[in-house]
Amino acid sequence: MDLDFDRCVRAVQSKDARFDGWFFTAVLTTRIYCKPSCPGVPPKVENMSFLPSAAAAQQAGFRACKRCRPDASPGSPQWNTRADLVGRAMRLIADGLVDREGVQGLAVRLGYSARQVERQLLAELGAGPLALARAQRAQTARLLIETSDLPMGDVAFAAGFSSIRTFNDTIRQVFGLTPTEVRRRGRVATTPGALSFRLPFRAPLCTEPLFAWLAAAAISPMEEWREGAYRRTLRLPHGHGIVTLRPLPDHIGCRLTLTDFRDLSTAISRCRWMLDLDADPVAVDEILSGDSALRPWVAKNPGIRVPRWPNAAEAVARTVLKRGLARMVTDHGEPVHDPEGRLTHAFPDVLALAALDPEVLPGPPELRALLSEMFAAMTRGRLDLDPGSDWWRARADLKDVPLLTFSAVETIAMRALGDPDAFVATDPGIRAAARRLGLPETPLEMTRHAARWQPWRAYAMQHLRIAHSAETRRQSVMPRSRRTRA
Image (cartoon, rainbow, N blue to C red; front, side, top):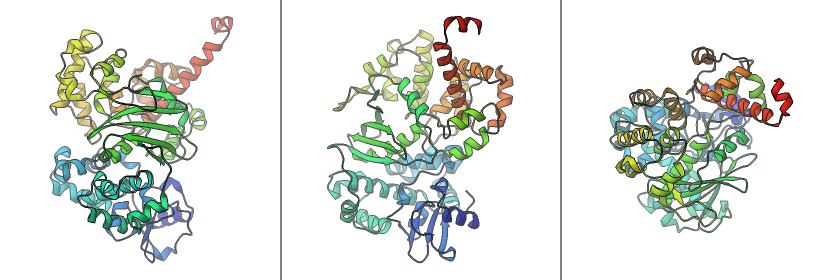
């Protein structure tokens, strides 16, 4: 985002929550930093300075506001729409890669030198990869302090700090409190063995179709819809987790049970990724409302989101296979213990899937061979579908896979890569909805028409799916005589 001073001032003075995560306000007199929607009295204009990231504010010596908690604001939506070096780096840092593999590991995954990565991040965000990862560690530590009974030493190492002294110094610098004071000030009641907290989002958020889609697509051994919440298992770098996500008016309630607390920040990042919580709904709705055919649906469902899958292997399997996924998870997934429900397995590791004889996979022979080939390509580095991948290179590699249709390529781009402009013009449901809305129906004509929806064509698809579902439900309850005449 271009930090135009006057524009930022107007956002702060109006407490506009749409800009939370886009930039941070540093108050020069108090040495604190806030998000634009901070409920406190706005500082004088001459005392304001604006920074592009929480890490930049912390690196400049500002501490987080205790009222608005800017470190917990929604992430910048630009990382969802950018496939350049900085966008890819930010998605990988959010997934915890720097904590696991260091800056050099980040550079290798991006295909650049560590110096180039550092230079680009500093230029755009005012902080390098280590400072950005440190800001994330501080946020993870605060969550563990507030929502668990872990001793502070265990919190420090679980959050990724190399020493207790560094942990104590960072918490005091970032929050202006000692770890003990943070626990005393912000203690949240939670279930023993679980961590409970809020996932903020950029309003509006249309939760009904988002959670309805997840519930309808749930695979019983690893997902369920239970008592108004979506529950699933997660495969994580150091173990597995079970997450419960509940839609609430001003946030998503999240409860996590982890086998290793070092996975907390990664688990949170993947939950936000699945629900597309860092999107900019105002920008999306503004573009899509420009089409008269979509305008009524955008008005009816403002803040639509594009659900995704938390790992690439799962997205590939769910795209290629329509049946047999439950058996694949049960036969080859990792067993988990769920004290609260019926979840029994996490999705299989891609290395384990690549090592399987294709004959033991579900589905017709040609799909078994296709899956086996794709899993092998992912383990050998010939097919990179992780959050930090290059979207266009990944698409090119997917198009080279025999038997993989254009529809499957775009679906993987949407559900695994998170490309907000992925579009499947050949989808039967999309074509049926287009016909009912008076839009072009043939794939070529629809693709031409959809150019006006860029760069948000994946969100337009969600509206078309909702329109198709509404018409299908209407037809199902229509009396037989009226259906015949129609």
